Image 1 (spheres, rainbow over the protein chains, first blue to last red):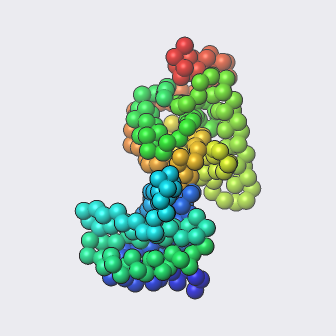
Image 2: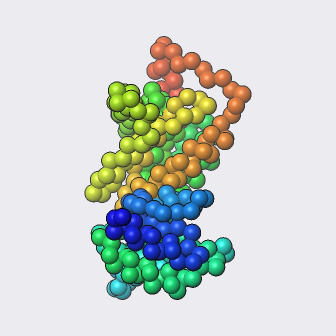
Image 3: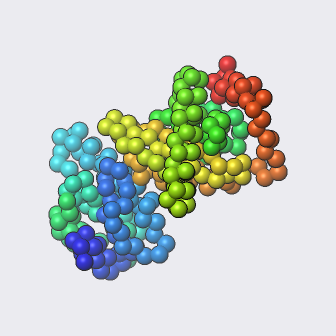
Amino acid sequence: MTEVQAVLERVTRVAGVRGALVASAGDGLVVAEQLMDGVDGRAAAALAGSLVSRLVRTAGAAGRRIPEFVQLRAERGSILAAPGGADLVLVAVAGPDANVGLARLEMLDAASRLG
Amino acid sequence: MRALEPWVEGPLQTFLDESSARLTLLMTSSGQVVAQHGFNRSLDVMTAAALGAGIGASTEELARLMGSPKFEALVHHGARQSCMLAGFSTSRGRWLGLVVFGPETSVGIVQLFFDQMVQQLAAAAPRDQAVAPKLPENFEHELDASLKALFGR
């Protein structure tokens, strides 16, 4: 199992997480994914990559450090994202019942291994 | 944005709004322009359409030689701007989309919303109109008429 696959395995093991992927933030393309059926990895990578890129640019323009973790909450779940090295971003799709706290810890640790 | 056929306008406008593309050209596989956004001069449109159709034909021939199905998209990444050339099937035959975009968006976003536009075009295409044959003797007249329609002059 590669390092990236191991990272995805750890994140998707968290209760309520429906899938995870590693995307190139600048390009918004999927690098690796482990998703449940019905989760569109291409769309998640493109949109989350774009979101994280803009947040990083916004933080930089405001003279702040780049965000370590992003949670976008919606009615039926959340999109979680953690920027890693080499322009990679770790993205998780979580259901409404997900343990976001544990997912955050796993993602922060996992993202530090990327790139 | 200007389109020769009104049913193309809605899907194309949605794509432009969502993708932040700088230039977009929709054309038939032979290079006949269907819609354009961002071009200021008819000469640029004619050149881009001719080059896009040529590249599309070359890549399809390469795919055939390799025994592959048609290539879906060709992306050139540049430092300041990039371009994507993608082919898709419509009820009017095979079309090509040429999209130029900058660092304000990403290839993933452009591809995502381009695919959405293709689905919307398929749903919006009129079913009951026959496609008129393209005759060489009409080509120049049709080209002039298309460019006038696309640039409003």
